[in-house]
Length: 185
Image (cartoon, rainbow, N blue to C red; front, side):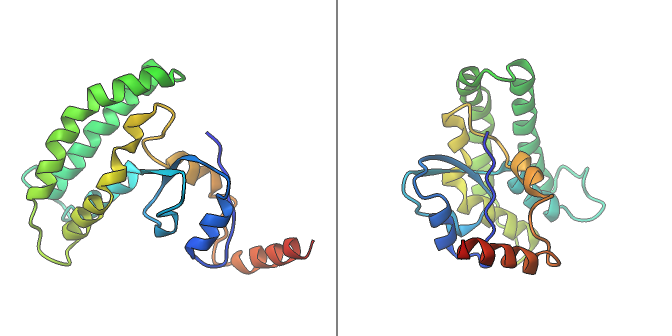
């Protein structure tokens, strides 16, 4: 995995297009719209983000109430995470084996998950509604990682890697000054 970080003062998709110019391949991302429609890019949605939406939708004190749809959503995600962990522990660097085992082991869970998700009718503007809509909106890219064992199931590794360098609100003006200096060179 290669982790590249480029600061931009706005979230315009033009920055992503410029930054990734010349790259073709898979891109593990969160839901940032700026990566949409980039030529030669296949997006892989992050299952940690998907799971987080369900976790946030679990009513307080009800995390063990398996009749709660949000808890059920978390359980589906947890099954996928457990399979991923098992594959990674058994074959840590064997991407071909990952490419073979992921669909074989995960498809049955996903084949149960998608119809379950489509049957959910949460109250509008609730956290569960937000979770269902988020996942359905990213359904096309949520299974991309099954195509290639080199694709990551989550973008946790990359987010954790850039955290020390990503500008906080206090550092953003400093980063803009560095970008300004770089542009003058």
